[in-house]
Image 1 (cartoon, helix red, strand yellow):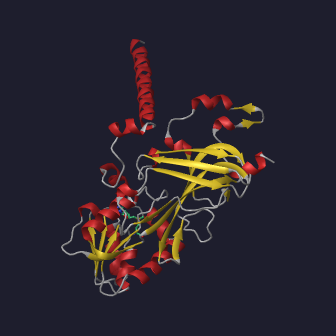
Image 2 (tube, rainbow, N blue to C red; image 1 turned 30 degrees about the vertical axis):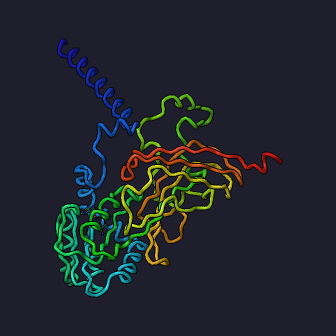
Image 3 (cartoon, rainbow, N blue to C red; image 1 turned 180 degrees about the vertical axis):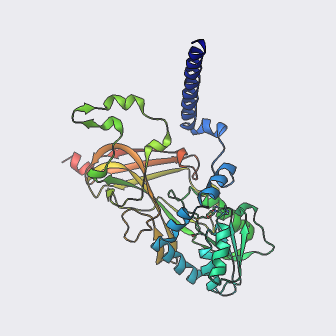
Length: 361
Ligand SMILES: C[S@@+](CC[C@H](N)C(=O)[O-])C[C@H]1O[C@@H](n2cnc3c(N)ncnc32)[C@H](O)[C@@H]1O
């Protein structure tokens, strides 16, 4: 009897303690200036992130999604045909199954250094032998630990996350570029456009914030006071092209990057966007996607409304409370970023400017 009560007391105490600690963690993570003192940054140098990334890509299930993405593979096949020349020395950063290294070898590269920190590499070796690929050296390492005596002509990579920056592309590629690429050498791909566009979601697919709901007269607005602290709650992830109805404005890159010349500190931590509404409707959020470009006419898009988009990349919606916009209104977005590689540190706000011509009509 006594031990039962003691047990109940102990369970109560520890679950209260756990809840308290979670609440403190949520509170701290919601404040980038506090989180910076408590959590390690999730950039390419972070041991935890490396561990996660290596484990994630060790699975066939992740590799096969990428390999089955036809627009992605066609883009890389064409890009390598244009950019790798016979006799080139090439680094394939994050070779995975070795597919890009194989394309480069078939283009006549003299040597391809195919590096990966994941256990998938053992399969890459077997695949290369099976496909009679020569001149590829597989090296099991993280790119930051990889060194060579001579610099190379080309760096190949596919390090783009759904948020473009969230697989540490910028930090990893720049590190290799500065240490191991010849002056005038090529990075494939190097040119990127980052988008953050206001969208309307299809009515049938829209999931509002819970406090916006009223289901057959059962009203949820009181939950407004219990807004979750977790950043993930304020983003929707989707690969489903049936979700987005239209962009409210005319899309344009929020950022353009050229990895040949970019310095990490050059990527601004605050972006201001202004979109004049050309398609009226409810604003449900801002959708994040990217386009990679090679040679002007060859590009790869993860945009939800782009015909021929690469399907395995998800697009991410930064959610906002529903608000209607008319043609001619302006949406002004401010996106503030703690670390680009860590979407949990992104914060966004917007404001509406009504169409002046209608206000005065
Ligand atoms: C998106 S997959 C691309 C695989 C392959 N290049 C392709 O196009 O199918 C990224 C690969 O890079 C590896 N990787 C990520 N960051 C790395 C790093 N800094 N050094 C070495 N390998 C890395 C992962 O383990 C993963 O296999």
